[in-house]
Amino acid sequence: MKRLMVIDMQRDFVDEDGVLYSPDAAAVIGPVARIIGEYTAANLPIVATRDWHDPDDKEFERFPPHCVANTPGARFTAAVEEAFGNYENLHIINKTRYSAFFGTDLEGLLEKLKPELVEVVGVATNICVLHTVEELRNRDIPVRVHSEAVGSFDPEGHVFALKHMEAVLGAEIVK
Ligand SMILES: [Zn+2]
Image (cartoon, rainbow, N blue to C red; front, top):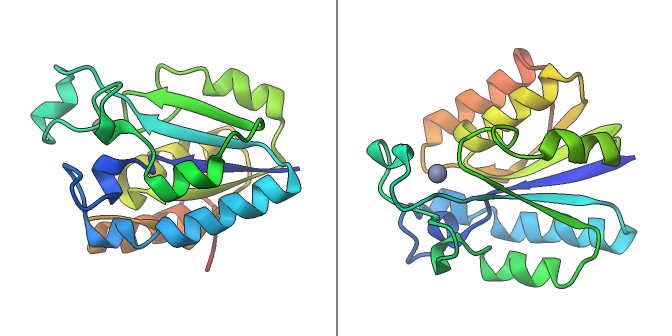
């Protein structure tokens, strides 16, 4: 059966007062919430990742401090929080790097969830979405990326990443 991965739909990325907000990332909130709704209605497992940094994370040498653990900016954006509600088939993965596999128990979780297909939505297309899809494909897990439900502050990076995921990583890209 298919499983959904929702990447980093957090306030610091998609809310107007977020540290790394961009309108192109915020534009995916509606499509992401709709797809979450399809999964909760069908009672299918959802894995949601959160960027989850210590205050002195090395990543802050490249990006302004964002998604510091247990701060408001690290919370899911309101529409996504609402779409999740108290869904019992939701698995949250806190991560410190672009790939949701690095330093997390995602590998073990996927062994339990046994996905025949992982559908991927969220932000940013060319960073955490790309690096997580790469790792899924390394494990020969079929991946479908919803192009209207992934977004980035970097429009060129967004287009590159979609092409790369399709042509090089063998992911299916759908609208
Ligand atoms: Zn980060």
